[in-house]
Length: 407
Image (cartoon, one colour):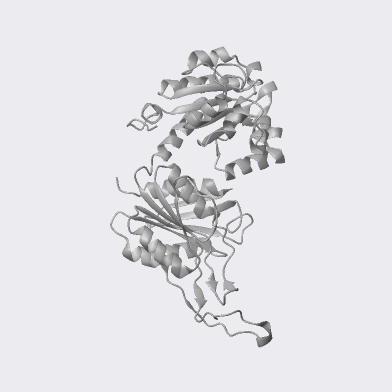
């Protein structure tokens, strides 16, 4: 489904099908207002209440305010597979309050009620709104569960601080209904930000052959580049990813497999020719052996002399060939002087954005599921993204890139 024109909730949410999952926490009463606001903004709202949620608020309350009666069980009703129908129909599954128990079951892949079954039966984006006591919110298991869900692309509306059940004060209070609805609006606005655009992304580390067995390479896993391609596809773009790694891609993403810098150079120039947005997230080797041995070099022959030569500067070539209106994003993996080196690369390569990370920092860059980046713009903008799942970093990078595309 597509949103109607307009930047307000009514324009963005009109016609969107939102499955509103309600967990079993005291904050469930606040979700009644979330339901009403979503419905008033034109969304088709289908409430799904857990058994525990019904101990705090009645299903009839949601039924009166939503687009259809609330669903509470896998077993009653005319539809023999309600979770599949709901999962396939949804444009978004919104879970509030997302209790510690519900987050743990979702992370583990359990499907023991209608809500968790729907979460597993959907390919739609999922947004969770945690709510619990401070001690639970800060517990390592909850922190780990949220990190794992974020790494899978689940969006999180963080709780606030304030009065909790029992009169306690602290972090873990469910976000206010207006803030939850605003997050939903922002989600759909972002999802439309690349509709009709063509995006080319590179990912992974190149391998430069020494002989048929050995190569010069790096530890890049390609996770960040693939997260960028997947997020661009979710936002409506036609995406091609030129990658050196065998990773699954989102539905509709065209995958071009390469190995060396020379192969990536040719493939990226071809992909970029028709692209509105080009993102060079791959870790391309700067040098390659000048001569590749035709057969395996034997240890008995002694250490070989490997003479290196520069590889093609793909980012510079993309910058020199880009057409007016095309947005170009480069990446810089650094180990020191992050801001200084990133600014120098931004100026030297003629790009719109440089996304820099310190790959020597804990949890950052190569092989990790998390990243922390500094985004510098040619227009002088600066944005820091603290340590987060690579899916979240991808959203931040594409927010900045999409804002620079011409209307």
